[in-house]
Image (cartoon, rainbow, N blue to C red; front, side, top):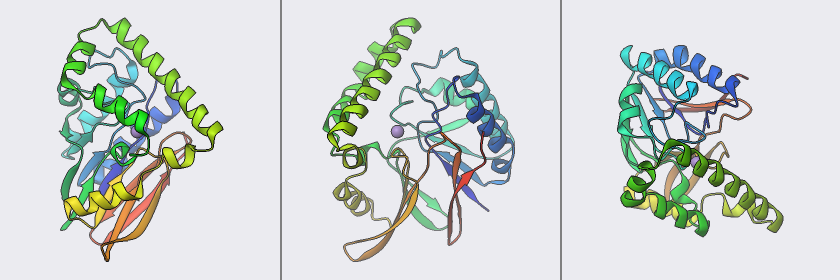
Length: 246
Ligand code: MN
């Protein structure tokens, strides 16, 4: 049986082709999987489970149908959809996973993360993350009217784009927005695993590395901007592959 991993779809009403591709994947290949893991940034933005978008409704519908067909669906928050709550997860038939999570994959322990916590060189982002993951911040934000929350998301997106432009100009984009090797090593050590799967950086690859003399594998899932990306895991086999075109 194959276990499937995806992340960084960044689904958005403005890119209906990708949402369609996601629907085809869920109704097609995913039906034959033993589980589906979504490791964050399923949505480009999420300001609360009262999100009125057709995209949100469509995704919940397809995922619910998959779960009802007997394929467990697990979701871990990304930095874009960290406000996705228990209500929406229930509607979509997804089980929420706390980041980081260690799971048993065909007899091998694997560490799952979104990946943003590994980007420790991005101090401004880590500060933003600490602030917005605070339960008090979250409660206060979600208590605002939908319009105000949507305006905030719009603003945060513009600020993030401006910051990426600055990093690019300064020539630090490549290093700042990638994982820090020390953080990767520390995660392997802390959890005592030899397999890690994460997304976030949009740099799909299967990395072989040694941590304290132990052979380890770090899989980075790809984003769904120009195409899809999926990791298939069977006993003793990992396959990271691009998926169709929208
Ligand atoms: Mn991300």
